[in-house]
Length: 220
Image 1 (cartoon, rainbow, N blue to C red):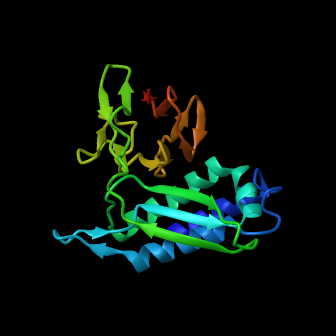
Image 2: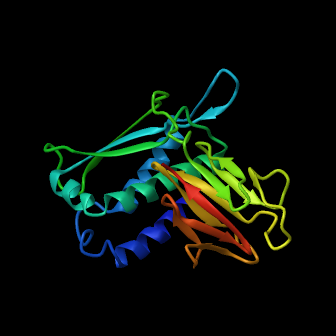
């Protein structure tokens, strides 16, 4: 399901902003599929019985593919990171640190060929200590390096006590050094800076509206 969602989004991107970059050579969806396979092959269990997945991925590609990927690197890395985190969530896997995906140019590889190297790296910090969601009433919700839930349910990470907010309204997914806001099919929807969204990667100062409730994403 996670991979299918990734493939659907990539197909739309390839038809739009990626159209010129990915007419030939290595296709992003191939990388996404390999990431999921490598996570499955490399998963392990820690001493506490917790399932772990690699959190660092180095992807070596040809020089030509590297140059093409550089044109859309920020968006592509965000999509790949979301895929990794989504698969981990689906499988109940955790990470030792923040997910890191890096492309490297390898002159020994031909166009369309790539090598993926997964590893466990607890040295990569979460980078979330100074990231939070604030309400207009002064409430302050510190974000963690994991999926955060927003809704009326008392078990939500960010509880909003308003009948116009759905019980499970939205989620915040860590993506690179930011977070992606994902609407969970809520009744009154999500807006970012006044625009209705299904999913949106947040930037510092973005105003989030959930029904009548306004919040702000802050990252110095």
